[in-house]
Image (cartoon, rainbow, N blue to C red; front, side, top):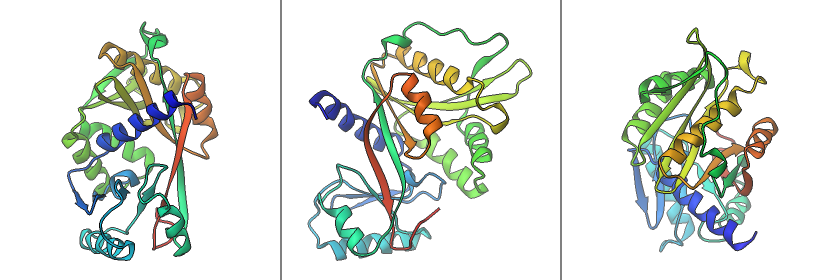
Length: 259
């Protein structure tokens, strides 16, 4: 990885951590604990941000106690930036399986989206509040009511201002939805979904282009997103928009593979 891409990857990781921070979070010896009951694992996991001053087993035991108290399974998110550097190998040696790999993709220059791309006739981009957005995304994900409420709470309380949008047709039918989480000159695309009946018709691409144009209007210069490593269709869409692979992360848990 060249130096410019490596630096953008680090900025994307920092911005992603800020954008996904829930109200329910804490810290133990340099590790960030996120304890939201939402669907997204990034809001209910441990991020090992520092080497830590405790032996690993003690640190894990303290994390386990916090997750037990919150009624959540302990999950650790492992990235190329996790500390200690061999944490992933140590957890693998303990028999903790890896699951839900995701690729972080980045776009270093948003000038291609400086001019608005016209939407097909009758289609509109509609800004919606956090509760309505969480309900729509939750329905598409099959989330529980508790997870939907937690998602709405996290969006409303986010330190990175929430901006969620629906792409609708003239009859008000939802064609796609997505949000941007913009922090200074970097913006993240999140929760991009197209309802099954409308997939393969270009709605996702139209939505993302409109969101990136919105970000440029707000002085964004670069962008990032997170997509399942096995989601070839979405990755093809994002590459078409100009995004490139930056790094991969995954999760591990002593409880096995966690939904």
